[in-house]
Structure formats: structure tokens, C-alpha cells
Length: 187
Image 1 (cartoon, rainbow, N blue to C red):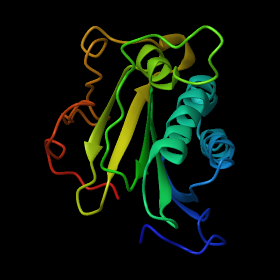
Image 2: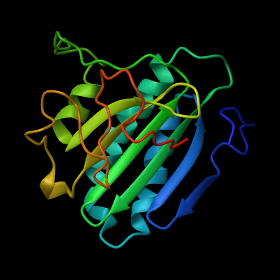
Image 3: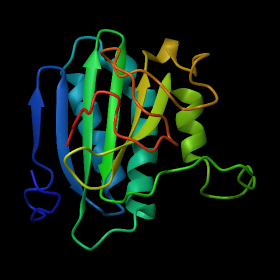
């Protein structure tokens, strides 16, 4: 599917088993739409409600980053992809910008309205990272989280943002420069 679509077709998605993918416009309302799509996806899965709270929060942060910070030509879209297995939810947010996100080295001011999104992703996910989109332009940022009682960083991912894909394949962390280890194209 192309990275530009007419707006009426943009929110149509594909669901296959425990996976779902959808294109969204780069619009300030897209984080809310993405949250509703994730909730609907998880509502259709046995035990999916266990992932809603953390999944919605982190998805919203990544979509907001893609909308606010990706410097791309007008008309480019954001793709969200969800995959849920027994005890793991994987979420990917694709955009057309090659610029990788980075954690702030200086904490956001106490009264700041922005600047904590990736910190939340790092602290509440079991792993996260950023990879170039093989077969497409830009990148995707992903996170994985367990059921709400199993959230929090793991020993392996706390400092680097690296984490395994849901099927055990290695992927690059947020500062890696190459494609995913297996050349996976998720676009």
C-alpha cells in the first residue's frame, strides 16, 4: 500500500488473526483514532483487555511523535501495526521520516506539556526500538508490552531500547543504523 492515500480510505485497515495494520493521516486527532483502533483490536481477542491500559498510552505517545515531529512532505501517512500473542503485544508506528527518535538527556521541566513520551515508552514497555523501513521510506518505532501486571523494562532493554521481536528475531535498537537483523519488511 502506498504511503499516501485519500483521506476516506486512510483509516481502513486489515486484520489477520492476531495482527492488524492501518494507515492514518498525519493529524492531531490521529493519536485518539489509533487508541480506539487498538482498543477495538484487543477487544476482539481473548485476554486482549490485559494490554489496553499500557498499550493505548504508549501507542498514543508514538503516534503523537510521528504526527508532531516527522518532517515529511504533505500527504504522507502514519501506519500503525498491532500484533498480539498470548502474553505479548507488539505495536509499530511507521512514518516517512528517516530521523530517529531520541530520549531526552535532560528531564522535561515539571510543568512542561511535552518531552516525556519516549521516557514513558522506555519505562512501561518490555522493549522498544527504531528500525528503518525495508522496502519503504522512513522508519518504524516499536514497543512490546506484557499484560498490565507484567509491565516494566527488562534487564536487557532498560538502557538501550533494544528488544526481541515477538517471534524471537533480533531487531535494532533506537540508535542502530541498519535494517532489522532479518531484513523484515513490515510496510
